[in-house]
Length: 269
Image (cartoon, rainbow, N blue to C red; front, top):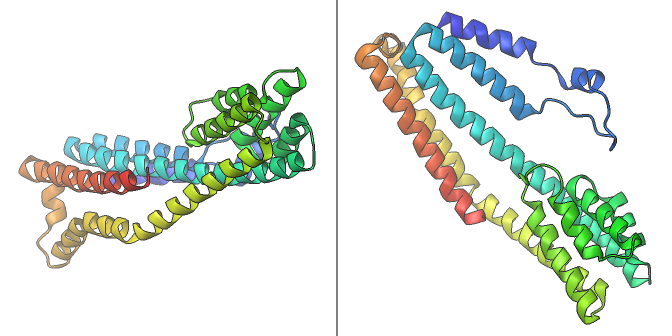
């Protein structure tokens, strides 16, 4: 156990700070500096803890791996949710500018360039792609879809929102419907979806907190037993039946937490 704690402490000490990452990493063409994200640092720390626990006792390593995998998965999903919220807000800001420019008679290329300047991330790339396609005489909707699908896999989920906007754009080009009106309707739909998701997540905050508290109750019981002199920590770390109970209890607690997360996410999907 001491070895696992030492390895964890070394992992935390060796993790680069945000200032060091910004100073040591070169800027990319888009002005952003790639670096190790917070979930990546957390996963590295979890791997270090698991490695130290495996060296101490196999059952402790299995339990630590279960807890570490659950924590890493929750951190990754939380990071994806934050990224999606940022990109949806950027997309809404870009649509505001595009609709305003189109209503005063601007060319779709100029409207897309203005929207790209106002937004960031994947929406900005999609609007720049749409502007380049319109400049060459093609369909801006096709360029919007190309920009939405470019790059890595869509972990944030904003590509589906860009796809709906591209469909509205294509309908306006095909049937001669005012483009600004359709984009404004798509923006209103996206804003309504975001507000509904926020209300549902706020309503489910209590259920998620209850699930987290229930998952941590066994730890409180172990602490109380240790304070009473029953030495449950020694039994669980000694291997044998105690080690089996540690693995089974950890797996059940993490499975319950994952099940609760899945049920709450099914509501907001």
